Amino acid sequence: MIEVSKDLPDGYAVSAHFLVDAITSASIAAGTTQDNIFTELRKEFGVQVGKTINHTHLAVLYRQSREPDYVSHTLGVQVAQDVWDSSGTVAVSLARGPDRLGMTLDRSLDVYFASALYTQALSPTMLAEVGYEISYVHGYLANPYLQVPNLGYEKPPAERLRHVLVGRLAHYLPRSRTGLQLHYRFYVDDGVNDQPDPWRMVAHSVEGRVYQEVLDGLELRLSYRYHSQGAANFWCNTDVSRGGQSDCYGFFPRYYSADPKFGPLATHVPQAKLTWEARALASVPVLGWLAGGAFEVSYAYYFQNTHYGGAHLLQTGYSLPF
Image (tube, rainbow, N blue to C red; front, top):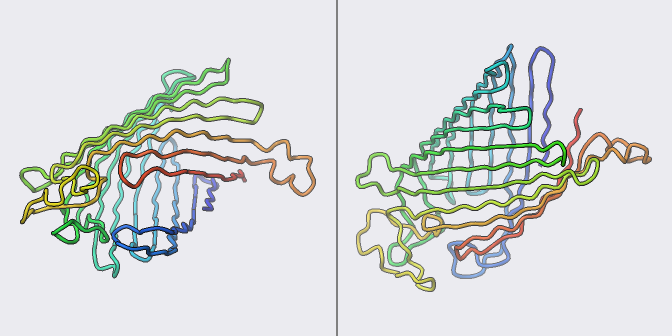
């Protein structure tokens, strides 16, 4: 992934990014009964243009993501206003995302998103945030590769209304050069027109972070995130090998899915991240131009209680101000 952002004269700012994901499979792919070794690419680019007028920041953005069986577009606007002598900020975002998916891209999914976030400095070393997000999703919400025993390709509801409450508290301890953060996210899914509600998925996410300056220019971040989610009302476990029943949906269910992520879900993600400001390279021949930036490397492990198992997450990058 490459991302470039630049502040321009007269309050303007622009940013752009481009990424390529190489998705590979050397084992049984989802929805198949035999090995299907493949490699596919997901390509994404995005651009954002903003302008600050006094204490107000306006921005518009566009993002497009393409892979063989999914094409996604996102168009959004953002407005942020400083308040209380610039000690706080109120930000509002709106976005629209028309997607096409399926093996022949003959399915559609429409996403409408809105959010409001209030950030307030409580002291010179303490910051608090609280926000609300709502999104309406309409269209094909199934995995086109998963099948339910005796019923065929899965059929979840076609509408989904998501409500999210978020909160964050950050505190810095100057004497020990330590930063502490606590994040919380509450999530609930609703149906829109269906009665009884087929969704009612409720989830909680809690994350704690500790930032510690180990040496001059070297920072260590340790974090841990826990996510707990209840099952959708329409979902039942059809996996016999994991305590389910292949006929739990009956003969003529209105909705059905084999996706375990619509069921009870718990995940744990511990992570360690190092950030090194490369000032020490200033006097090194050839590498001196890197001294103005910072290198990052992080490792995390993703634990989950579904049959997909865990995953190693290794990331690295370099950023350079200009």
